[in-house]
Image (cartoon, rainbow, N blue to C red; front, side, top):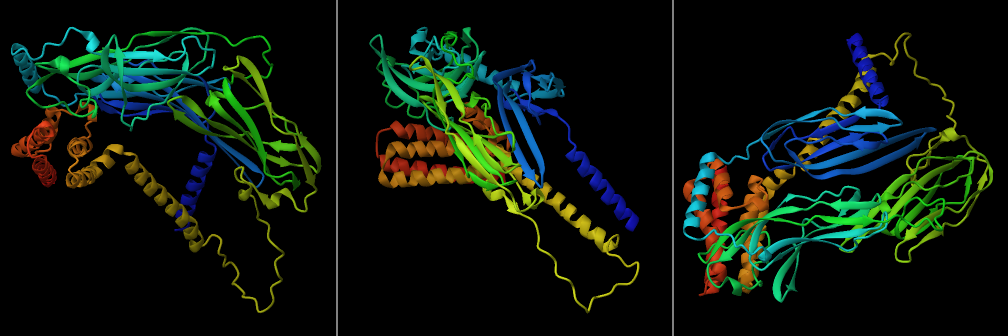
Length: 622
C-alpha cells in the first residue's frame, strides 16, 4: 500500500513540475461543426509576447471581422521569486457560406525571433435544415405571386439604399476618423441582416455601435423627398500607414414592403418603429427581398509633420494628458513602491506602447501591469491607459525618479505637445529585517505582508515520548493527508470548469430562460392593457412571441419568418393545430394593431391568445 501511494505522489509531483516548466505555446480553437449561414469564432492564443502575426486564408468560409487582437499580463513577486504570465489573443468572426468539410491552414507568429505555427483546424459545414421540397414549395409560391402581379420589385433604386460616410477623408497617420453606415428608405422594410462586413486594411478599428440597443432613427430630405434614416453601424478607424487606403463595401439584405395602391402616400410614422420586427401581415402589401451594398470608399492618409517632431514621439495622436501617482516616498530597504502613469483623453489610447521611464539603478523594477479603461460613444473613443510599476529599493539612500515626458500630436492645433510628470524624491532607510521576511504579490500595497515568526518557547516536561522507528513521515496517514488536498483540488477545478462551460453557453441559457422572458414581456403587456396603451401593448406582445421562438430554438431574430417558425416547431413534434394557432395569433396581433373597433376588447383577446399558445407549446415540448 505504501509503495503504491509513493508512486502516485511521484507522478503528481512530476506532473506539477511539467506544468511549471511550460514552454511557449501557440494554439487555435473553433467549432468543429457549423451550419450554413451560421456565424462562429476562430481564436488563436499565444502564452507569451508575439509579433508579426500572419493569419490563414479561408476557403468556403467568409471572414466577417478579424484578426482582432487583445493581450493581458500578470506579475507576481513572492518570497524573492518573480513570476509573470502573458497572453496574446487573435480572434476572427467567421461565417459559413458553403457546405462541405474545410481545413483552416495554420497561422504563424514570432516570439523573440522564434517562429511558432498553430495546428490546422477542420470545420464541417452542414445544411441549415431546409429541405429541397420546402424550398421548391416556396419557389412555387413566389412564382404564383409573380403571376398575380405582387412581387415585381420596383425599378427605382432610390426608394431604399445603403450609404457609407466618413467624417474625414484626408486624416493624419494615427488620427481617429468615424465611418458611418446609414440606411435610407421611403418604404417599410424589415428583417435586416448583414451579409458582409467591410474590411479595413491598413486601419486599426473599434466598433462604436451597441448591438443591444435599437437603431438610431431620424428623417432627412433628399431632393425634396423625405427619407427615414437608420444608423446601422458606426466604426472608429485609426490609419496605421500613409497613402491611399480603401474601405470595402458592406452588404446587407432586407425585406421591402410594397403597397398595391397609393404607395407614394405611405408615411414613415410606424414602419420603422420596430426595425427588426416581422413584416406586416395584411393584404394591402407584398414583400420583396432586396440586397443593398454601400459604395467603396477611399481615404488618403497623410504623414505627420517632420518639422519640430520630438525624438521621443511614439505615435500617440489626439487630445491627451499624462498623470502619475506614487503610494509612498519614505520607506525601508526591500519594501515595495507602487508607481503608476496614466494616459487619458481622446485618441488612439489603446495603441500607446510602454513609456520610456528611467528608474534609479538601486531599484529593482518589473514590467508594468497595463490596464485600459476605454469608453466608446458616437463621437469616438476616449478613456485612459494605466501603466503600474512595482519597484523595490535594494540599498538605503536618497533617490530621484526623474519626470517622464510624454509627447503626442494634437490634430486640432496641428502641432506636437509634450506633457511631463512631477519629479519624485525617495528616501530609503536601512531595513531591520531581511528580504526573506517580506512577501510581495501583485503591485498593490495591501498585498505586502510579513511572514516571519517569533522565537519558539522551550518545551518543558512532561514530554510525550514516541517509540523508535515510529515516524509520521512515510506513514499511511502521511500519504493520505498529502493526496486528499490534491484530489479535492482536482474535483473543485472540474466542477468549476463544468459550471463555467454552462454559463458561457449563451444558446443554452437563452433556451432555459425563453419561457421566463416571454412571460415577463406578457406581464408588461398586461400593464399596458390596463392603461389602454395600444402601441406599447402590441410591441410587448410581438416581442414576447418572436423572442420566445428565437431563444427557445436558437434562431437569430433576423432569420425569423413564418416558414422558419413552422419548421422549428415541426422538428420538435409540436402538433400541427398548435403551429397553425401560433401563426394565427401572430397574424391576429398584427391585424388588431391597425384594425378599427373596440381596441380594449381586441387587446384583451390577443393577450389571452398569446398566453395560452405559449403555455400550450411548453406542454407539448415536454
